[in-house]
Amino acid sequence: MIRERRKDNRKKGFTLVELLIVVAIIAILAAVAIPQYNKYVRKAAAGNAQAALSACLSQAMAEFADNGTTTYTCNLQDTSPSPVTITLNADGNLDSISDTSLTVKGHNVTCTAHTDTNTITCEPS
Image (cartoon, rainbow, N blue to C red; front, side, top):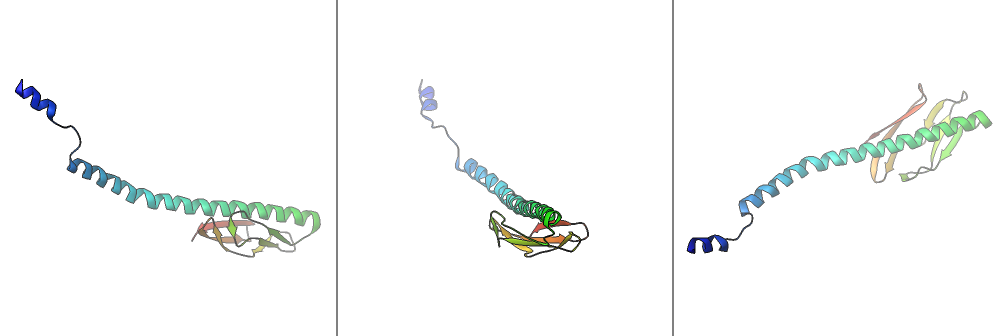
């Protein structure tokens, strides 16, 4: 009966060493996950800028086909500087964009106008 009482009085829980091991594992996982998350966010910002500029380029080409206008200005949402101006050459093909260094939702992005393929690509910077 005395032995049973001693067993019942023992407290259950985690030891300090067990808790420290769990904290160390969480810290290691966070050290790996946070930089990867930041990389994905920067890539997403570049993708957003590229999609917005490509849509703007399509609008500029449509405007050129309708009116012969060689410059087209777009207001890009969540992007600085905005507006961005796209210039087409006399054939209606991409000539240049006014700003190649953009900030999208706080992330710096560098965009390149490819005049040979009429495309715009953006990369995190």
